[in-house]
Image (cartoon, rainbow over all chains, first blue to last red; front, side, top):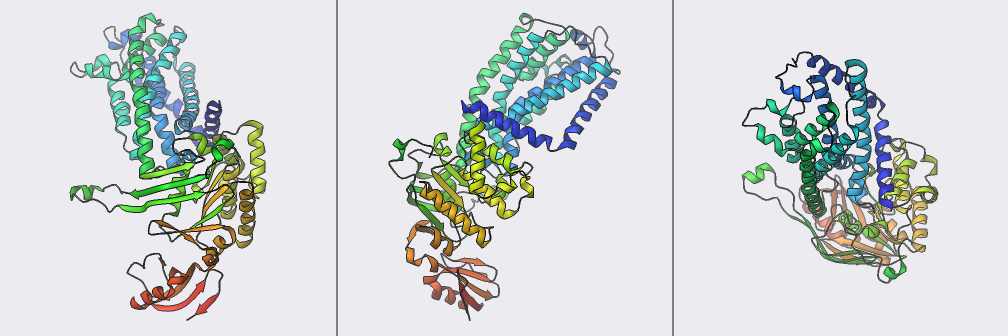
Amino acid sequence: MTGPRTALAVAGKEMRLALSYRLSFAMGVVGSFLGAAMFYFLARLVDPGASSPLARYGGDYFSFVIIGIAFQSYLGLSMDTMASSLRREQLLGTLESVAATGTPLPVFAAGGAMWQFVFASYRVVVYLLFGWLFFGLSLSSANLPAALLVLVLSVAAFAGVGVVSGSFILVFKQGDPVRWLYGGAATLLGGVYFPVQMLPDWLRPLSVVFPITHALEAMRKTVLLGAGVGEVSVRLLVLAGFAAVSIPAGALAFGWALRRIRLDGTLGSH
Amino acid sequence: MTTADSVRAGPCLSLQGVAKHFAPRRSLLEIAHFRSPERLDVFAGVDLQVEAGAIVCLMGPNGSGKTTLLRLAAGVLLPDAGKVRVLGRNPAASAPARCSIGFLSSSERSFYWRLTAGRNLRFWGSLQGLHGSRLERAVEEAAALAECREVLDRRFENVSTGMRQRVGLARAVLHDPDVLLLDEPTRSMDAKAAESFYTVIRRLAEGGAAVLMSTHSPSEAARLGRRTVRIEDGTLLEVEPGRIGAVELTIDFEGVAEAPPPAGMSLFPGKLLCPADRLAAALGWLEDAGLRILGVSNSEGADDRA
């Protein structure tokens, strides 16, 4: 079982490289505080009236958006981590040497993802901590086991899309349409900054094709309203369906991309 | 050696009928004008076998395909036709086959510059399946063999160019590979360092490793290679042992050459490299091009001023 140990070694290498840039690391913490503060003051502009679409999430915009942003960083990471890990190795000039070792590239990318998830968790905790300490965020009614299940299924649904995205990066180096669609469009239509109920009637049906819509809806209900698994079961089923389709699609796309760049000789090109 | 003896019956490294071409991607301008960039044929179908204990030197002018051949053998590049086998397995598809290869890339960028040389070696060793005390022991032994122990605690970015080559060699040998693929391993080394490098390579071959290395130096090939192969126009030609030292001559000239040099010769500003047996053709080409010949020297530094 050298795969997990090798993945851990890759995660350790990523951590050491990240910590070798100390200023960037410190600025990330300050950035989290500034982000939380900005949304706190923005939230004071939003009137939580009884008829507001926010009412179904408890009526507090700050809690609504802070969960959206914190959770989006996980989902964005699930989708982005493989592509960014491979891209970084291409730019460093190490990818070809990695491919010449006995470690398969998916195991290598999974190791990079492990560190990214640890780092993202740390950032989410910092975000929530600042929200709780300084801006009155309350998580007292959160159903944590249900939220954890939502998180795991969401990450699985996004990871498959992320592998497809990584395949594009391997072949085209830059300009990834999957990332553009699921990163950009999903942020607008998936309800990160505002409830999808605020979208125009003709646009709202489009939001259901993005897994982030279902993931955020389920996460907000479990964290802000304390909903149980049964109350978000439909959303969980949709996320499981996304995972069942996207993970095999990702595996196929990655296999094709790897063969293509090994034929083209562009494994180490950027 | 890392692999079972059962798969060691044949050659350690084998290329059979390997063909490779590169078709550059079309630019937007070429797409708009329905043009295709020129296809570059590197190999038309070459065969090469390297047995356990052999040291095969690969020579040829710049762009002839030495690095491409090594990348094909390492499995990071796929052939368009033919088979590459390492201990009977396809290295592009088999992780155990890649674990039995030590690949010394010609690029210094294949290391993590912000980590120490030691951290780099531990990391690359773990990618080859070494962990715990086995990994620590392998790093120690490889660093001692490659004579780079004194830089293990130094960030790779602060290590000298020649020493980086040694760290590269340590990386290539730390998992005790059956096949060593070395891309111009001594290019940044002084004569003394290169000499100790040859000793290491010979010792590894005596231990049973099959070594395939590229070099531009005929003297290096003559001293190290029990077999030398020259790449010329996409084919592999065996070079007789007695002729290796005289393989390449350097002709210094004055002026700017505009036409491409004859096949098998390499042109640099003020220099033309040519096989010794084609000296007359090289001198004729320079005269026809109106260039003033300054002198001819061989790889040992012997000089014959015009």
